[in-house]
Image (cartoon, rainbow, N blue to C red; front, side, top):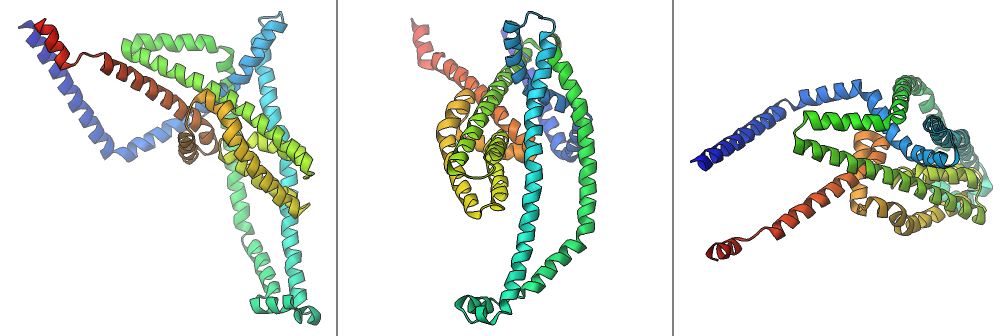
Length: 391
């Protein structure tokens, strides 16, 4: 009697839970646009804190290494954490700012020079059509067969730039305003990340305590375990990706120096920084580097592209699996999927965070699958239970 009553209560709770989930799913699908707007509004409000949390996770990797070194070398234990935070900030900001200062002016000059070369080339093609000696040659006959008014084409390009200059200015103003707003959010997030890093152990204890007290015991334990796996995966990914970027940038600089390609140190540093974004970052660095080299020597630009394609194949098949793949243990197919989805959701930052997120999900799914397989293999079958009852 007692067992049947308990079973009825369990079945009743199960049915109520199923009905409640179905109602919530129906209401969520019916008002999905309102829910999405509410989520975006809350994300906008918490944007500085989210940025600060991401910055803290990234800066925690070099800060932990620097702090461990300082604890072994410096006797001032109280000043170890602040000094480690300052050194980690100088290291990370110095790398990005230094590469930007070196590359951006040269890239602007390269694009300006390419535009000038295109204009001069159109003028030369137009003058060649007026030269009787050239027009009587096979090249002149080929140009005559093309039937293009090169001066008119140059005039149309200049008119296009002139007529769309206002829109370019407006877009630049809008971009500047959005960048200014992003800088404010980034600054607030930066301050927030410093507070997180300075008291990360205390913050971790408080979050774990709140989770255990206010959530069911099983759910709280699962949530703490998931956060631990995500934190470990992200830390290993950042360390491995930074190591791989340094190796790739160094090999690129050495190879360019051997091939006597210009801008070897600058482009090597650029390739190293852009390689922090998995898969697509190195291609961006290749395009920018090729544009810079093109203004000096077009043939060297072609050699650079071929060299970097070969280097990326070696890096992707030999270096990356050893340095990063062994750490996060994520197949290449899911790396590409994580980069694609993360890029569509969050741009370059989404590409950077997509791989460790997918790796953490992959590790948790593998762990849950292994536990379920163990339960299935160790669970007695129906025939076994019948034999045990007969015995």
